[in-house]
Length: 150
Image: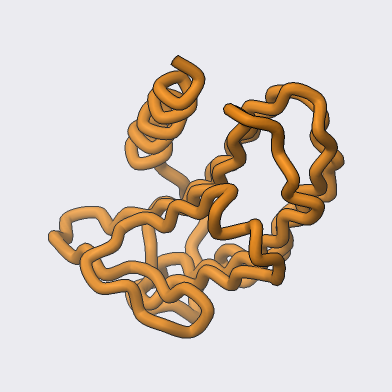
């Protein structure tokens, strides 16, 4: 039930993000589209049974069938329009770098946690369209959902 609720949140958020539009353009990206780069660190991942943490970065290119949009830690992720990281990825520690490989029309970041009280830290920094995003630096001890559309 909990896993299903988390999956539904992620899917619903993805649909909202891909339907969003923005007038901000990054002149450094091809065609005036946005470049994006996120540094994602989730610390202290020792979740209780049934708890979950996911961070998803999605993007879209209007009028294009292009599906290879992202690099993860320097590796191009072929046929991936989004990157989904979960508690299994974060358990090893470290920072994940998610970076666009093409100019994007829409970019969204989703952070979801189902948490029964075990503290964990969420740290996300980055740039979209050449501008710093509002950094996320949060200690999470309960259910948590944040969506950012750029």
